[in-house]
Image 1 (cartoon, rainbow, N blue to C red):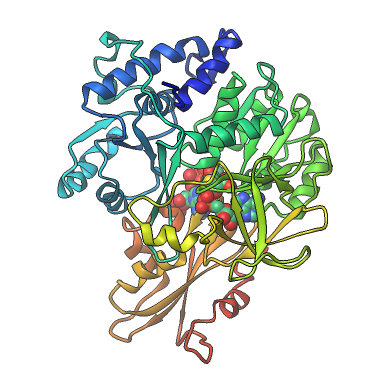
Image 2: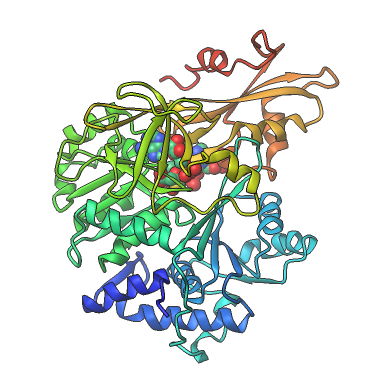
Length: 508
Ligand code: MLC
Ligand code: AMP
């Protein structure tokens, strides 16, 4: 029987290109070699089997970036288990929801979070809770060396699930986007070809987190398909990134990375002498960053556009013109249309909602058939919620969002979720959460709050009340206390008006 397990796609590539190269290189650690991958992931696959993880079971992971975290992801693919990475910034209160929703067979966390999570896991009846730290220690790894390094890679059909990635929703509850082996394989192959990946010769500079599509799939899959070495940095440290640029050829980042490089005095064209490609995505890249970067580094950043539910949808061309403020063309094999609110395609030049379909389109939201239905047209097109237009050549520009979403430093924040938490605070009558321009993060989260008069609230008091309830990046960076929120004739809060009132919050 044909085996469409994504792991075999990587393995095939590796075998045909030798494999005596480093895969991951983290400062202070010996490199992890491509030649070690099969046995290291094989042992972890055996460990998963020993723990009772069967094909189709969920494995939830909230750990720091490490070689072992990547190996665990690959081992889950091999084992036919469904990998669910979580942002390390999520609090145990937030994680409890994910455990309850996904019912994983195994949860792997950092050792310092173990006790807090054990309480949360107990409350929702979670069986296994094991640990993994960034240096390659933890209870998940115990006894690994005595396990079989070569178990058979579990047979998967293309449509079988490989991963579930949680993405927040407009209603405030996070939704698990179900991604299949074929979804991930098709997008990786397309990007690898579209960006002219140089098998063996490219060296990827990786400073992104590995719990989102960008760092985990887009970046690592390209490297795995190309058997490329990866400078695998623990996070975005500006000095470390600048130090590693001369030894790299490709970097992928969110716009904040590029804003910060431009702020750094030590960043210059000489540092980029071996680079062939800088890629930006996850949030709009300001045109001035694009132009400033070209002037300083001598490189035109290649901007691309995608989503958790779809992987990458569009990209500026590798060879052709890369235009600031546009996201280029639909990737090969992917169809894009700009539609009105009824799904009727609009002529070129008109703004509407971007809809797409293709082999990368996810299988729906985990255990949420209604939400899945609401985001698809009857003819199978997926409604992204992004407002866009296409020119005569079919080049796409993202002009805004139909969904009430803030993107801060590449992380999505849904106002509804934050408003729900603020409204729970005693003394709060109601709140409205908006994004305002921020030079570093693109947008910053700001809350406008009305008190109910039962007590005296302060900005710092409200921020303190949100600790432990929301991840730090979701917490408002400023709170404005007001008498009332502006509303339209229908009684709806006028967020556009609020955004206008507070847009200069971070103006220099
Ligand atoms: C950190 N902080 C943030 C933040 N990141 N606040 C708002 N927005 C963010 N993105 C806060 C911390 O809580 C902390 O606050 C303070 O800023 C410093 O924390 P830090 O850890 O030192 O921050 P830093 O390392 O500088 O992180 C910034 C960053 C990081 C931009 C490097 O956020 C990042 O790596 N973002 C990438 C996100 C990403 O990969 N997105 C892809 C999604 S996939 P305090 O108050 O506690 O000090 C997707 C699909 C697609 O969207 O198309 O790719
Ligand atoms: P996520 O849910 O984290 O996958 O975020 C996906 C969203 O990020 C998209 O729906 C867009 O709103 C936004 N996004 C990603 N890339 C870009 C880009 N290049 N330009 C504008 N918005 C983008």
